[in-house]
View 1 (cartoon, rainbow, N blue to C red):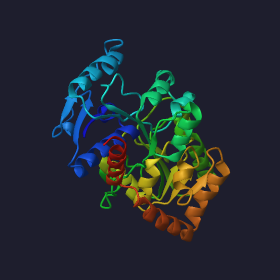
View 2: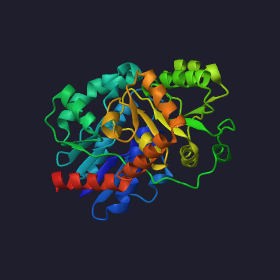
View 3: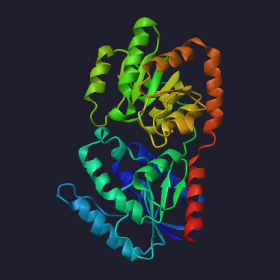
View 4: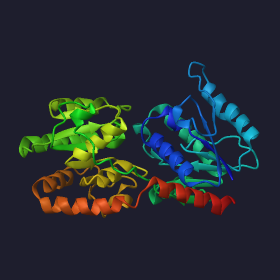
Length: 366
């Protein structure tokens, strides 16, 4: 089969869907020597150098050009290529595809619909307008969890085929240097509690910061709190709350892969308090490094992690506090969680994700 993948997030994003698309493409090219792949993306990028790819530029300075690109430029290219399958990796698309091409849309989660107040207005409007027709016209929808599938069925009543394919993680780098040696702040000293993700309201960081401040004040824990990742939108309240202890609450901004490995390798506890996730890669990554995980039940997180992390409802500060204290004060609890997490994380690899994608495409379209 000739498979065209619209791989915009590799060029235009820096967080979740960027990594998903990048790792999926790498793994497809590595394991699949039968099918032909063509990638469409907006910017010159060395990542695509040895692939069959086409750059369809974005022109942000021209009002309406992104709509023209999605509805005219890319469809015209796809008509020339006439692939058997077209995959859109980030919800919105593909549009106006050739009649003989099968449409596959990957839906990671429905947060712009379910929690519009956590997103910029433009994103919520685009999702509300476009998703019904996208889901209706897709020949196959790929989701990372049963929870995301349930959300789609509940909100859109679609009868289209929906395949659940879990995401993968990159093998850990156990030789990672200490954070300060990896170019991160010298304030990041062991022991520390780690969060990794975009700094935005959906990640529920205010409750983590409040819990940490209470533990520092009332239990005198020695830990610092590292909030790692790029600054997203609507983060003013998070930054304001963190400013109550600038010495011990540390932001990193965007991380290189080496810096991310360093933070995972040397963390004492990983906390993921998110209100809603379609899957949740960072907790799995932390487990693979032998870090005990405390995780909220938001969205698919309960489905993915309930048997392998200490869980709490996103608004339950008391349970979060108790979980953190148990890991700090009870080595046996911590060691058992580390053991369980290490074994569990081995089930999730990008090669397995890519293999399942190929199987689903072959079973549906060959």
